[in-house]
Length: 247
Image (cartoon, rainbow, N blue to C red; front, side, top):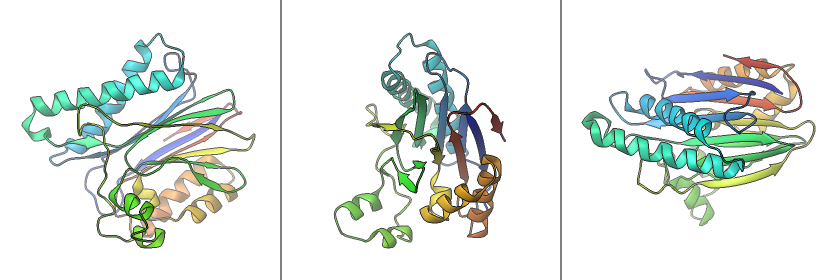
Protein backbone atom coordinates (compact mmCIF):
# COMPACT_ATOMS: atom_id res chain seq x y z
CA UNK A 1 0.00 0.00 0.00
CA UNK A 2 1.38 3.40 -1.01
CA UNK A 3 0.22 6.45 0.92
CA UNK A 4 0.95 10.16 0.75
CA UNK A 5 -0.68 12.85 2.89
CA UNK A 6 -0.16 16.61 3.05
CA UNK A 7 -1.90 19.78 4.24
CA UNK A 8 -1.22 23.38 3.25
CA UNK A 9 -2.50 26.63 4.74
CA UNK A 10 -3.25 28.07 1.29
CA UNK A 11 -2.87 31.68 0.16
CA UNK A 12 -5.58 33.49 2.14
CA UNK A 13 -5.81 31.91 5.61
CA UNK A 14 -3.46 32.50 8.54
CA UNK A 15 -4.33 29.27 10.39
CA UNK A 16 -4.53 25.75 8.97
CA UNK A 17 -7.83 24.26 10.14
CA UNK A 18 -7.46 21.12 8.02
CA UNK A 19 -6.14 17.97 9.69
CA UNK A 20 -5.12 14.66 8.14
CA UNK A 21 -4.32 11.23 9.51
CA UNK A 22 -2.88 8.44 7.36
CA UNK A 23 -1.77 5.01 8.54
CA UNK A 24 -1.19 1.93 6.43
CA UNK A 25 -0.62 0.08 9.72
CA UNK A 26 -3.44 -1.29 11.87
CA UNK A 27 -5.35 1.11 14.11
CA UNK A 28 -7.18 -1.02 16.64
CA UNK A 29 -9.02 -3.69 14.68
CA UNK A 30 -8.92 -1.69 11.45
CA UNK A 31 -6.08 -2.81 9.14
CA UNK A 32 -5.43 0.82 8.08
CA UNK A 33 -7.12 4.18 8.43
CA UNK A 34 -7.15 7.47 6.52
CA UNK A 35 -8.95 10.65 7.60
CA UNK A 36 -9.41 14.26 6.49
CA UNK A 37 -11.11 16.80 8.76
CA UNK A 38 -11.81 20.45 7.91
CA UNK A 39 -12.47 22.50 11.04
CA UNK A 40 -14.55 25.64 11.44
CA UNK A 41 -14.90 28.22 14.21
CA UNK A 42 -13.29 31.49 15.27
CA UNK A 43 -10.39 32.15 17.67
CA UNK A 44 -8.48 29.08 16.47
CA UNK A 45 -11.39 26.82 17.45
CA UNK A 46 -11.47 25.37 13.93
CA UNK A 47 -7.99 23.90 14.04
CA UNK A 48 -8.68 22.53 17.53
CA UNK A 49 -11.97 21.00 16.34
CA UNK A 50 -10.42 19.08 13.45
CA UNK A 51 -7.37 17.79 15.33
CA UNK A 52 -9.35 16.99 18.49
CA UNK A 53 -12.05 15.12 16.56
CA UNK A 54 -9.49 12.98 14.75
CA UNK A 55 -7.69 12.18 18.02
CA UNK A 56 -10.96 11.11 19.67
CA UNK A 57 -11.74 9.02 16.59
CA UNK A 58 -8.37 7.26 16.86
CA UNK A 59 -8.67 6.69 20.61
CA UNK A 60 -12.15 5.23 20.17
CA UNK A 61 -11.09 2.93 17.33
CA UNK A 62 -8.13 1.65 19.36
CA UNK A 63 -10.37 0.82 22.33
CA UNK A 64 -13.10 -0.93 20.32
CA UNK A 65 -13.33 -4.75 20.40
CA UNK A 66 -15.64 -4.73 17.36
CA UNK A 67 -14.41 -6.12 14.02
CA UNK A 68 -17.01 -4.73 11.60
CA UNK A 69 -15.30 -1.69 9.99
CA UNK A 70 -18.50 0.32 9.52
CA UNK A 71 -19.56 -0.24 13.14
CA UNK A 72 -16.08 0.73 14.37
CA UNK A 73 -15.99 3.96 12.37
CA UNK A 74 -19.61 4.84 13.20
CA UNK A 75 -19.00 4.57 16.95
CA UNK A 76 -15.77 6.56 16.66
CA UNK A 77 -17.34 9.43 14.70
CA UNK A 78 -20.34 9.55 17.04
CA UNK A 79 -18.01 9.73 20.03
CA UNK A 80 -15.90 12.46 18.41
CA UNK A 81 -19.09 14.44 17.83
CA UNK A 82 -20.16 14.18 21.48
CA UNK A 83 -16.69 15.05 22.78
CA UNK A 84 -16.61 18.15 20.56
CA UNK A 85 -19.95 19.26 21.99
CA UNK A 86 -18.60 18.73 25.52
CA UNK A 87 -15.52 20.85 24.77
CA UNK A 88 -17.63 23.63 23.26
CA UNK A 89 -19.91 23.65 26.32
CA UNK A 90 -16.93 23.97 28.67
CA UNK A 91 -15.08 26.67 26.70
CA UNK A 92 -16.95 29.82 25.68
CA UNK A 93 -14.40 30.63 22.97
CA UNK A 94 -15.10 27.29 21.31
CA UNK A 95 -18.86 27.71 21.06
CA UNK A 96 -20.04 26.93 17.55
CA UNK A 97 -16.90 25.07 16.50
CA UNK A 98 -17.22 21.99 14.33
CA UNK A 99 -15.51 19.94 11.68
CA UNK A 100 -16.18 17.89 8.61
CA UNK A 101 -14.82 14.36 8.51
CA UNK A 102 -14.23 11.81 5.78
CA UNK A 103 -12.63 8.50 6.74
CA UNK A 104 -11.82 5.26 4.96
CA UNK A 105 -10.35 1.86 5.73
CA UNK A 106 -9.41 -0.67 3.04
CA UNK A 107 -10.21 -4.32 3.77
CA UNK A 108 -9.74 -7.09 1.18
CA UNK A 109 -10.13 -4.90 -1.94
CA UNK A 110 -13.07 -2.98 -0.47
CA UNK A 111 -13.02 0.61 0.76
CA UNK A 112 -15.33 1.34 3.69
CA UNK A 113 -16.07 5.06 3.70
CA UNK A 114 -17.75 7.40 6.20
CA UNK A 115 -18.54 11.05 5.58
CA UNK A 116 -19.97 14.09 7.37
CA UNK A 117 -19.78 17.51 5.70
CA UNK A 118 -18.21 18.54 2.40
CA UNK A 119 -14.76 16.97 2.53
CA UNK A 120 -14.68 14.35 -0.21
CA UNK A 121 -13.49 10.90 -1.13
CA UNK A 122 -12.82 9.98 -4.75
CA UNK A 123 -11.79 6.72 -6.37
CA UNK A 124 -9.69 6.92 -9.52
CA UNK A 125 -9.22 3.95 -11.85
CA UNK A 126 -10.35 4.38 -15.45
CA UNK A 127 -11.68 7.83 -14.62
CA UNK A 128 -12.62 9.63 -11.41
CA UNK A 129 -15.64 8.90 -9.22
CA UNK A 130 -16.79 11.09 -6.36
CA UNK A 131 -17.99 8.57 -3.80
CA UNK A 132 -19.16 10.91 -1.04
CA UNK A 133 -22.00 13.39 -1.39
CA UNK A 134 -21.42 16.90 -0.06
CA UNK A 135 -23.59 17.85 2.90
CA UNK A 136 -23.85 21.46 1.80
CA UNK A 137 -26.46 24.03 0.89
CA UNK A 138 -25.35 24.29 -2.74
CA UNK A 139 -25.34 20.50 -3.15
CA UNK A 140 -28.97 20.43 -2.01
CA UNK A 141 -29.74 23.20 -4.50
CA UNK A 142 -28.10 21.17 -7.30
CA UNK A 143 -30.06 18.03 -6.35
CA UNK A 144 -33.30 20.03 -6.37
CA UNK A 145 -32.48 21.47 -9.81
CA UNK A 146 -32.31 25.06 -8.57
CA UNK A 147 -28.76 25.62 -9.83
CA UNK A 148 -26.39 23.79 -12.16
CA UNK A 149 -23.28 21.91 -11.08
CA UNK A 150 -21.18 24.64 -12.74
CA UNK A 151 -23.10 27.39 -10.91
CA UNK A 152 -22.40 25.60 -7.62
CA UNK A 153 -18.63 26.01 -8.04
CA UNK A 154 -18.87 29.80 -7.76
CA UNK A 155 -22.01 30.18 -5.64
CA UNK A 156 -21.64 32.69 -2.75
CA UNK A 157 -23.10 30.15 -0.29
CA UNK A 158 -20.88 27.23 -1.33
CA UNK A 159 -19.15 27.15 2.07
CA UNK A 160 -22.37 26.61 4.05
CA UNK A 161 -22.52 22.98 5.17
CA UNK A 162 -25.63 21.17 6.39
CA UNK A 163 -23.90 18.51 8.50
CA UNK A 164 -20.83 18.65 10.74
CA UNK A 165 -19.36 17.10 13.84
CA UNK A 166 -20.04 19.38 16.80
CA UNK A 167 -23.33 20.75 15.44
CA UNK A 168 -25.83 18.64 17.41
CA UNK A 169 -25.94 15.57 19.65
CA UNK A 170 -26.94 13.11 16.92
CA UNK A 171 -24.68 13.21 13.89
CA UNK A 172 -25.97 11.88 10.56
CA UNK A 173 -23.19 9.89 8.86
CA UNK A 174 -23.14 8.60 5.27
CA UNK A 175 -21.50 5.21 4.66
CA UNK A 176 -20.30 3.60 1.44
CA UNK A 177 -18.56 0.33 0.59
CA UNK A 178 -16.69 0.40 -2.70
CA UNK A 179 -15.10 -2.47 -4.62
CA UNK A 180 -11.58 -1.44 -5.64
CA UNK A 181 -9.77 -2.43 -8.82
CA UNK A 182 -6.06 -3.40 -8.83
CA UNK A 183 -5.05 0.06 -10.08
CA UNK A 184 -7.50 2.10 -7.98
CA UNK A 185 -6.23 5.21 -6.20
CA UNK A 186 -8.22 6.73 -3.35
CA UNK A 187 -8.21 10.50 -2.76
CA UNK A 188 -9.50 12.13 0.42
CA UNK A 189 -9.49 15.93 0.36
CA UNK A 190 -10.95 19.10 1.81
CA UNK A 191 -12.89 21.65 -0.21
CA UNK A 192 -9.75 23.77 -0.38
CA UNK A 193 -8.70 21.44 -3.20
CA UNK A 194 -12.01 20.81 -4.95
CA UNK A 195 -13.07 24.48 -4.96
CA UNK A 196 -9.81 25.35 -6.75
CA UNK A 197 -9.23 22.34 -9.05
CA UNK A 198 -11.81 20.49 -11.14
CA UNK A 199 -12.31 16.73 -10.90
CA UNK A 200 -11.00 16.12 -14.41
CA UNK A 201 -7.78 18.01 -13.71
CA UNK A 202 -7.34 16.17 -10.40
CA UNK A 203 -7.66 12.86 -12.23
CA UNK A 204 -5.20 13.91 -14.94
CA UNK A 205 -2.58 15.03 -12.41
CA UNK A 206 -2.83 11.83 -10.37
CA UNK A 207 -2.78 9.61 -13.46
CA UNK A 208 0.28 11.29 -15.00
CA UNK A 209 2.36 11.72 -11.83
CA UNK A 210 5.20 9.19 -11.36
CA UNK A 211 4.47 8.90 -7.61
CA UNK A 212 1.77 9.74 -5.09
CA UNK A 213 4.08 12.31 -3.50
CA UNK A 214 4.50 14.20 -6.77
CA UNK A 215 0.75 13.94 -7.41
CA UNK A 216 -0.08 15.31 -3.96
CA UNK A 217 2.41 18.17 -4.19
CA UNK A 218 1.15 19.02 -7.69
CA UNK A 219 -2.45 19.20 -6.44
CA UNK A 220 -1.45 21.53 -3.60
CA UNK A 221 0.58 23.73 -5.94
CA UNK A 222 -2.24 24.03 -8.49
CA UNK A 223 -4.84 24.81 -5.82
CA UNK A 224 -2.58 27.63 -4.61
CA UNK A 225 -1.89 28.86 -8.14
CA UNK A 226 -5.65 29.00 -8.73
CA UNK A 227 -6.16 31.22 -5.69
CA UNK A 228 -5.58 29.05 -2.63
CA UNK A 229 -8.64 30.57 -0.96
CA UNK A 230 -8.79 27.95 1.79
CA UNK A 231 -6.62 25.41 3.58
CA UNK A 232 -5.89 22.35 1.45
CA UNK A 233 -5.76 18.72 2.61
CA UNK A 234 -4.86 15.74 0.43
CA UNK A 235 -4.52 12.04 1.26
CA UNK A 236 -3.70 9.65 -1.59
CA UNK A 237 -3.87 5.87 -1.12
CA UNK A 238 -2.93 3.16 -3.60
CA UNK A 239 -3.77 -0.25 -2.07
CA UNK A 240 -1.73 -3.34 -2.84
CA UNK A 241 1.82 -2.03 -2.42
CA UNK A 242 3.98 -1.57 0.65
CA UNK A 243 5.35 1.97 0.84
CA UNK A 244 4.24 4.92 2.99
CA UNK A 245 5.13 8.57 2.37
CA UNK A 246 3.77 11.12 4.85
CA UNK A 247 4.45 14.86 4.82
